[in-house]
Image (cartoon, rainbow, N blue to C red; front, side):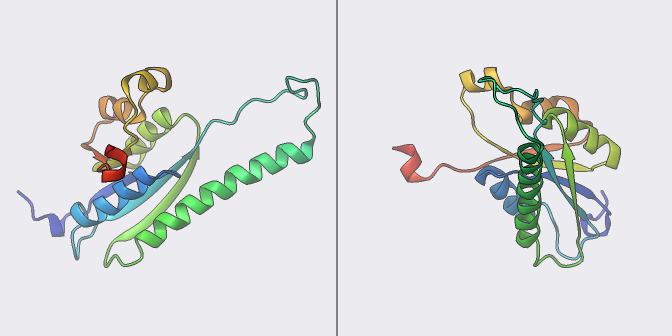
Length: 166
């Protein structure tokens, strides 16, 4: 077996606004990334699919181009903020290249495409821990990715605190 420190691995980590992805990234840095490795860490944020708005909303009011532009800018600002926060988490890494990507679309499909396109060696993501009913309606991004990507998938579950268990 090859020495991990001499391998050049591409480790893709999905990040979003949630605590679960922040925990998964931190866990990855402590447990997957090795000191003095030649790893490349790729941070991926997927902007949700843009809702298709007609000129009229449900109440008959017109959406102005200003409102549409503001909604687009807000989506871009959120993406930039999430990536910057993730990069700050990675700032103390030595000898590890950190890259970032912002994509748009259904996270399930986009993540699987990016994993394949970049040739990721490992894919890391957090688990939101939705219950059975919520998962049935929303679909599980982690489950979809685990079933469809062609590299090892590490789903990191954030431990519940004592306050959450009560």
